[in-house]
Each structure stands twice: as C-alpha cells, then as structure tokens.
Image 1: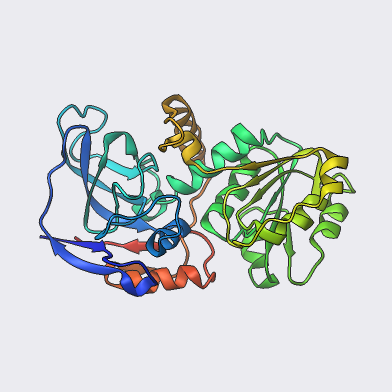
Image 2: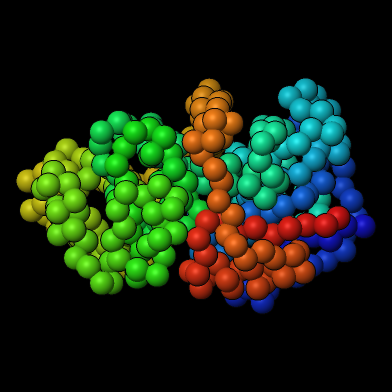
Length: 338
C-alpha cells in the first residue's frame, strides 16, 4: 500500500485526503515513479475547486509536478529505465493523472531525466514553471538581449523562473509585487528593478526606468484590471502575455493605448505546446526547451528556487493554504518519504 492524495468532493484545501491505496502497475507507454518531492501549482487549487480548464472525475488524484526515481516501466517504454532520476513535465491532462503521493504513474512522454546538479525538490520547478516561462518568453515574446521584461506577481515560482530566464537571455527585468516586503528577495533572484504596485504607480515607474520606451514583453498571471496599467507600460509593438487569472474579473483593456501602440495581447498556457484536447503536443519544441533549460541549469544560469517553508505529505492541506496566502517566494515543495 502507498499513501495517495485524492479528493472526493470539490472545495477548499480541506477536501484533500491522504488514502492508503494499492501500488498500481504502469500500463503500455507509462512509467511509475517512487516520488521524492512534489511541487505545488496554482492551477491545482482551481482544479480542486472545479474552476480549472478541465473538471476532475471524482474521486480524483491531483498534481502536475513531481520528482523521484523510476521504479517500473510499462510495455514499449524505452526513453527511461528503472533507477533513473526523473521529474514530470505537463504533457498530460489534470483529470487523467495526478502526482500527489508516494507513488505516481504518468505517461512516459511526461517525464524527463533530472540534471545531476539539482535536488528532487528543485527538479519540481522544471516542469510547469520553467517550460511555461520558456515558451512564453522565447517562442511568443521573442525576448532578446537589450530588451525589457515586465513580470508581474513575480514572487511566484513562475515569476522567479521568468526573472532568471530573462536574465539568461540578456534582458533587463522589472518585477512587481503588491508590497515592498519581497523587494530584496526579487532583487536577489536577478530582477533589475522591483515595483510595489500597491505603493507605486506601475506605468509611471516603468516609464521612468525605461526612459519612456516601455517594456517590450509583459508576462502577467493576474489579468482583470491589471491590464489597464500594463497597457500604459508596454512598449509600442510590444507583447503582453496573459498566462493566469489571479484576478478573475473581466479584463479592462483601454482602447487608446492599444490603438496608439499597436501592441499584442496573447492568452497563453503551457499546454499550447505540451498538448491538450485543443492543442497537439509539440515534441520537438519540448525537446528544444528541455535541452536549453538543462544546459542553463548545468551552467548555473538557472537556479530553481524552493520556498523556505517546507511541508511533508501529511501537511498537504496546509501546503495548499500556504499557497493561497501568497506568502511564498519560489516553489512550494512537499517532501515525500515513501
């Protein structure tokens, strides 16, 4: 028997239960992992509440990011072997698989070998966070050396990844947080400038920092009314990438900045590249992204950041509550002792 996290009804973190279930065997094209660490994502709170892009089939497993060791492989799997250190990547649908627990089975195409120089906890950031950032900044935003990135809600694990990747690309980074409490932490991660949006005028500060040029790429998980100051802050012909809805109210996009600057607004999710019912999986793009990210990790240009507060599997509900409190800087990780 192994401990697995499931939920039998939609709701708050209280619905997450740890259950003793039989150890399953992987089917054709699947692999089984002995899980060492689990990384939490905002999407999982929405999935738990029934507000995500797919709906859970109850009772449901949950989770995208895990790292551990392959302990069984299904028929036809040749990409990894028993004993390999691996981490999951988001090339599966949330209602079909889930990684919270001591053991998980996922498609073989949903694991990548973990670089030797990072821990299992750090490896949980390489799936959702760094792939999300790579495709957004490199493929969509085409962020280049000498340009400026504005990344909002930057203390999240994805925000931290965007700072590090943008610096690796040679860009200047303006990071935002609601208050100045996390300013030093963001500067420590490589941000060139930090704007506290509840204390400062976002558009005015971006104009000051960029000498009026604006940000070439904006990476935003907030949406809602945040689009108004972003429209003032983006550069002419720039790109605004909206990858989340922390503020679920209707987006307010002012027409005059849009027409005067002719900037692009692009809705985005990592599944545009890793695959979903609406988007085919782009295996070549995933391989290209992983090759780049692993190279940068090995060079030390990307250093996955784990939040200083750690949790055990028994604390999974508390870990979700902590994520919803917005106190973290970096990836919230749950350590698993099988």
